[in-house]
Length: 206
Image 1 (cartoon, one colour):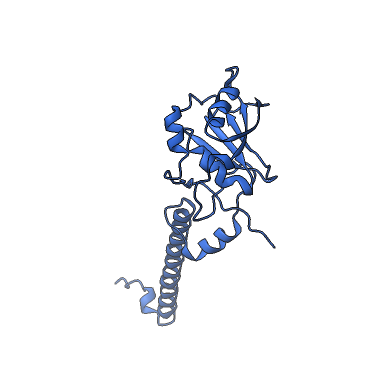
Image 2 (cartoon, rainbow, N blue to C red; image 1 turned 30 degrees about the vertical axis):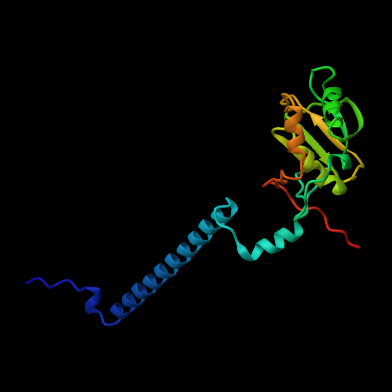
């Protein structure tokens, strides 16, 4: 007559030990699942913030306060600024295209509107955009005022703050509007438009 094989459950010493191991394994699995879920949520949130889909309100004030425009970036004109009269704008016109005499032609059209032309010449370099207006702190509003005349123009910041705006005519420049259109575009009725990519000007420490 054969005997029935003994199982661990028949052993009063082994059974509690197995139950303890099973319970500990379940607890460990639960803890690991929670940790993995939290890490996945943090990774997803970080990805959304970095991609710009989700903004972090509490960090905006700090980043906005610390981030100011640097050389050749797009500056913001001060809030509440209005266009200036053409007579208050000083500009040097430079030709970065292969079209001879272009700087002089554009300068003459602007001068007829009252803009003060400080210099004309050829740009020592290449620029493939349409028009770039380089201005320092004191001329940012003037540059935005003048930029209304040019299609696809961009205002860029100069840390040296020259007295005159540098207007660079690039390969993408076509032609100026008509005289009447320029007169209208330079009038106070046409508001300044802030570039969405602009950064605030540095604040005076004084």
